[in-house]
Image (tube, rainbow, N blue to C red; front, side, top):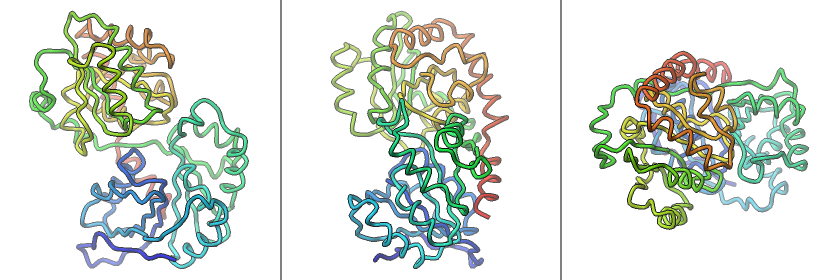
Length: 379
């Protein structure tokens, strides 16, 4: 049936009080995986963690410190069997007997359904949707979420107002069991980096740097950002920095060539330390088709950056009011380019809006508040 293979051993002899069983579609590096690593590292051995990724990818384990008791659950499961796996999932949950089962997003919905019948507390964390649900909810999925997440021992956690509305109004879940729990970040990480060193890391000269940090996947719609960047005037000189890796890399590089901006575009690749790169930026940009509460945006705000982004998820609510005119309708490279151009031309505007974003991040999105809420959630 499977087994838990320990990857880290706790350095303390303290008794670990609660075991959490986490189910992910993937444990590659992404927003929800980074958040779990933050939680693990903060609480140390207050919890033990068993993680199962349905695709067998566990790259984000490298973000969890050696002081945290964490194990991979190793099992050969044919995920294409869908609901036929429910009896197996139920046996696994009962075998592990965790204090809480934590499922993440649609890719683990069968686990959520199976957990309803085990008597174990269940937390389902919904961070957003893939391209197939970027613009509308699929009726079949709505119905199944309503059933799978409707158990009396299930709490649904969402990071954004948009998702809270979907969960309560469209999925028709009991509002008492849907918690709005915003993401948080370690603000100090982004305040203590030398900007000059960050600019050297991206080989910047005197250009105005427009940067983004994103997984290179279709829903991030980075072609739109490339199209917008190509529309900018060449005076003052600008450069685009794309931080992140993923399956879209080659296609985006070819698109930059076609647009004639390859020489002014740097595909930096993935980094586990964005705080060493993002302070180099003058402007942060996002062009996603779908987001809810992106951690990359919070990190940009913590760096004191102005933001240009498509109006998806909670982005317009996340940034400072002074930044909201630069949150534009998705799908329009002209609108994105105009918003970028305003910040490119006006250094004082960049500084003022960036400072307002930093103040809002400090007031609303410090990770200390997030940790307190997750401690209450997990018990």
